[in-house]
Amino acid sequence: MRYRKLGRTGYEISEIGFGAWGIGKQLWRGAEDSESLRALQRAVDQGLNFIDTALAYGAGHSERLVSRVLKEHRGRIYVATKIPPKNQIWPAQGALEEVFPRDHIVQCVEASLRNLRLERIDLLQLHVWDPSWSEDSQWYETLSELQARGKIAHFGVSINDHQPDSALELVRSGKIATVQVIYNIFDQTCENKLLPLCWEKGVGVIARVPFDEGALTGNITPETRFPKKDWRNFYFQGDRKCRVHDRVQRLDKLVEGEARTLSDLALMFTLHQEAVSTVIPGMRSVKHVDANVAVSDQTPLSEEMIQKLREQRWDKNFYV
Image 1: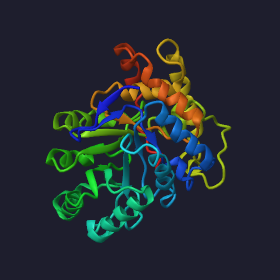
Image 2 (image 1 turned 180 degrees about the vertical axis):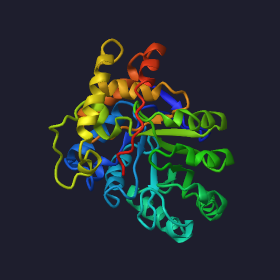
Image 3 (image 1 turned 45 degrees about the vertical axis):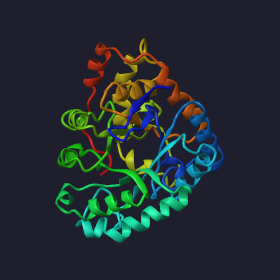
């Protein structure tokens, strides 16, 4: 496993992190707690030391599962979690007082600390962000106070889907330690402005959705069916599975030579950027862990391959 600096936090974290949304089970069907715990343990055993979870993932269920692994590895794992918007609207909508009022931030931090069984959270993130809040100091003052009290070590934001430029002013301000952003072969928008700026300002980058919710695993076909109440029924609604399948067939031709699978190629593409501190694929099984963690040991992609993958950019938004 290779490690990278998480911005100016001082943390040296595994370049493959553990995305813990799926193990919350609320919107992703098919996860079982026993297997999720085995997956977490397997990941740590293979050198992974960064886990990204959130209070909203299964109403704290993901955090509580993570806590069971943390108990056995105190001081060896860095944990990032997130505060959900009070009005429960994703992406961000509303005035700051409706989304992240002071009392809500404090209450959520205390709830996450209880769920994780920690005295201090390594990295706390606002789960949504709106650039209009940059002028309101309340969120920053509240998080700074919690930092001074030893409740959190560092804080950052998770940027709204497909809106990387919405955090540019915030990154320039120097107020945050990290950003979390969608970055994959299809959505490369953050390369334009956000990643160069983060590198310049020493802000850590957590790359999420490297597989485009499963599209870039190659497992989505027109015949794919998801369990009831699985949110992918929304993401891949209508003709989207057919459109994804057509795109992926083009990518399949690029797998031979520098990557074992399309999933490997997707992770390796995300990691080619030096500004990326870690990529956090969702993992719900030991099989997922073994496949994803192994990517860190592979030879990085050639510049020729990177250029070919840059040609695969796809301007879409399946979150609406």
